[in-house]
Length: 295
Length: 256
Image 1 (cartoon, each protein chain N blue to C red):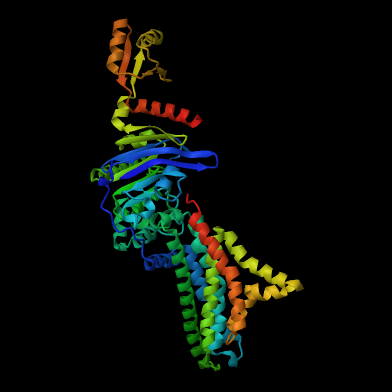
Image 2 (image 1 turned 180 degrees about the vertical axis):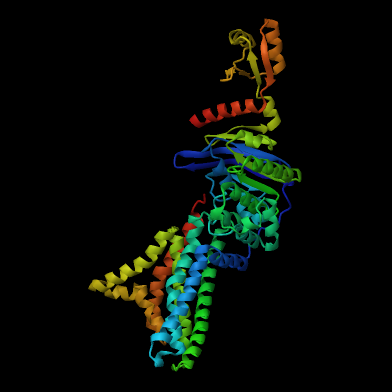
């Protein structure tokens, strides 16, 4: 459970995070989306008590992060996979985390195997790790205390397609066991497959948030008309505005059925009519974030 | 939506200091830099004994002789370990994970200070041990081999080690940048000594504030109360002041 209320961070005149509020419920994965510099990382650092908030508050498991006695046992945090000592081995990095939390270091080898780092990788120093391996080590680090909440900033960065697939399964299983996941990304498609809820941020402000499926449903319909000019007239009658894509399709913010009926009545031939789904959401995401950035 | 869904609360007390100190001690030695630094200190300490055994006149081969000379490498190099213990958190960006696991940053600072003191104690004990071995060898090859040592020298030596390690930790906390902290740690007191030596008007001040001068009596038998007073004043300037300012900086700095 993560609750963020009216969180704001100002650096001088600049509002890096502006009045951000959202909640992450147990049993769900929340995708935290936004372009680079939107304020995702600053928000996550404020949740974890690493950056003081200018105003507003954030609680994890019902208390402010800094008042969690042994936070590693409650919240797993991965904010930057590269923020590990390059001269330490992967195994030692995890052992230090386990010791700090008061856990037996005997669990370390198994935890490394679980994230796909074998005994050879465990003995190597983090300097020699690829970004993907560092992400895996970071996930093991976040999860070694068996927390109920995970806060992950761009965890898919540097992972190969197989790794991204594996991570989705891991996070899904974690949430299905009752865990709470907050996962940030600047790539919609990365979180789309695993998230239950989406929070979209741009220019420090929340642009939209809600249930993923509802948002996907709202995304609109992709239409490929035989004659775009004729279809324009249909849209005008429906009082809708379409967005042209480079591939000749038009994204219409409406239900497929309503558009198909209107086109049939007008005698306009459509070659393709389908719910926009993720593609439409991405379209919406880009539209929202591009205006958000210019505010 | 309500806090009723929050997980059962644990005691919100902080992590125990002995555990954090153990972690900080382990962090001193588990990186390549830390490991090699400790190894070099150990070898250099053994080398001081070897130098006395090889080149000193027989009457200088005493336990006290080995011990006093043997403290030198750790007094010079252990502070670098103290500097690294703080600066590496920022240069290697481990502060992010350290302070995520221990949000009470002051406890991390205290654990680092405690680890520094423990390492200084261990270094002094190891020096004494090496001196025992060297003295046994010295006896065998015709050295004086006296076991007499003035008690004040043992714990004044320990004090010397502790002061310099903490000065390293303090400089690391204040500057939070490895090369800068190491250079200024060595250069600033040296520059101050040079100025104190060259400018006559500075001499009375230098007697109280030049840590190179005030720590010299630590390696001589039975320090006087006046010498302790001067040491205390210079330690306040070179160790306590940067330690306090550095700690405040560590507590306030935004981690990213």
